[in-house]
Image 1 (tube, rainbow, N blue to C red):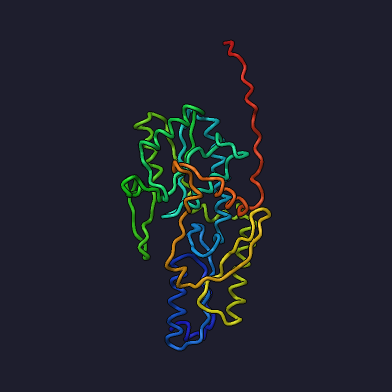
Image 2: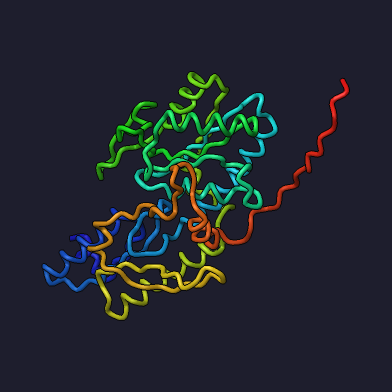
Length: 313
């Protein structure tokens, strides 16, 4: 009714799965009622969980933010490990761990002894005894431990850690507002391992830090928007513009199209080949996938060589 009242003939909806569903419904209704309308979906979600596209605009920038934040948290924890021995950083993500996985890009020169030491995502259930053993081993080796934890992480029984750690409410789409996973995990670590544990939770700041924009992400976001308009003007309707990766090194990409009906009914989780067998880290395949999306390398970090001398006093 609103579109007809204003004689709107082009409808471009920028967003994720729910937005794709809404656009598909509007496109279908226009066809059923004989109203001439071109409806196109433009992907945008930091969750990176849209199917039929290599990745989503927004993900490259949030991945860059996460990498920088976790690198800084790692250096801070390494410096004052006696104060905060274990640091848990809780990332956004309901069912998919793409954002949390990006923390792996923080590692300095790829060194596994730099943060994050452990990564836990919803695609792998957490066995608490195993997690605590992982933490203890890192602490015994380094004297501190940094964990990247997804807010949607689930325990062995399938229940959300956040449900144990804090209250939940449900939005209009039926999605639970998560929070409390890191708080809960810190309490378990402190209680069972007797280690000082503290958590950081960037929250929605992950998706609003313009200073952390990836130039690759910016270019791709502009291009999918422009392509949607061009396709609609040319007569296309009922589709979402996608990103198609052509090569990793050098990174090359182009655009494609996917039916909105298909996009709306699918959720893309992290594939098995992106997660290690132990369920506490990512693989080289994920790093190869994600690294081109964040743009230039992170700022360099100066580190002492740690030449040790015999203690005299």
